[in-house]
Length: 150
Image: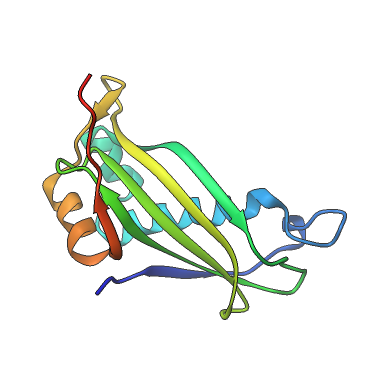
């Protein structure tokens, strides 16, 4: 059974547009912050990532908006790993965005990789990070990502 990492985000006046509903980029900003919080929670804060020369990079981000979020409604965002290559250099994550804790407002799927920040090339993460993703945050619908040969 998967463990979803989640966090409550309180909305701010600046999160809303002239139509009085949440700007589309706020959903993705909350998801990005949650992914960083997940790394920090597991011992990989920005200082540690910088020290080991590793950084996360998004390759694709898809957001499906389901319900309008209005001023005064807060967000709860979760994340789980839905795909990973065997060596961990590519990953797919699924976010659910709920308004007021119970109404699904959006679904975000991201595909990413790890970059060696010195060489500026795709790299594999430390084994303990890859193991943590697999052991604790793997979705019930997890699938291995198969790399196509060139």
